[in-house]
Length: 219
Ligand SMILES: C[S@@+](CC[C@H](N)C(=O)[O-])C[C@H]1O[C@@H](n2cnc3c(N)ncnc32)[C@H](O)[C@@H]1O
Image (cartoon, rainbow, N blue to C red; front, side, top):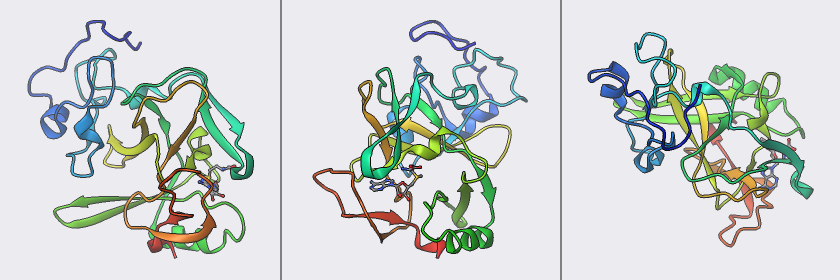
C-alpha cells in the first residue's frame, strides 16, 4: 500500500544493492528527484523482489502502477490525448509507456509497414560505457493508456527508464512540471537521436519545430 505524502516510510537498509547502484531516486512524497530527469543521470533502479524492504519502501513507485484519475479525451486534430482529473506535481509518476519490447529489425519492419496509421514505436536511447543501447517499445498491439500521450515541443512530462527485477527498462512517464487538472499531458517524442518528420506538429507552443520528431534509426 502506498503511503500518503509526508508519512513516514520504511527506508531500505544501508547497503541495498539497488540504492548503491542508482542512488536515492524519490523524495519522501514518492516524487522523482530533479537530477533523475537528466540524461546524464545514473538511472533509476527500484527495489525488486530480492530486496528485503517490503511494500512500503519509498524506492518502489513505478511498480505500483499508474496514478489514478487519468482520462483519454479528444484533443482536436491530434486525435486522442491524455489528461488527469486532478493536479500533478513535478516528479509525480503518471504511467508507463507500456508495449511489446521488440528488436531493431522488427521495429524497422513494423514502422515501414505502418503506412498512414499512427506510429507508436518509441526508441529509448541510453548511453553507457559501451556506446548507445537502444530499446524499441511498440504499444500498438499490447499497450496501455500511455500510448495516448501526444508530442509537444514544450512538454510537461518526460520518459525516464526505470528498472526493477530485470535489466529491461520500463519507460516511466513523470511530470516534468506542475500540471493542472484537465491540462493535456505531453512529452517530447525526440527521446534521443531525432529528425523532423513530415507530420505537422500541432502542439501550439511558442518554440514549436513545426513537425513531429521521429527517430531515424527506425527507417
Ligand atoms: C502515440 S500516438 C498519440 C495518441 C494519438 N493522438 C491517438 O489518437 O491515438 C502518436 C500519434 O499522435 C499524433 N500526434 C501526437 N502528437 C502530435 C502533435 N503534437 N501534433 C500532431 N499530431 C500529433 C500523430 O498522429 C502521432 O503519430
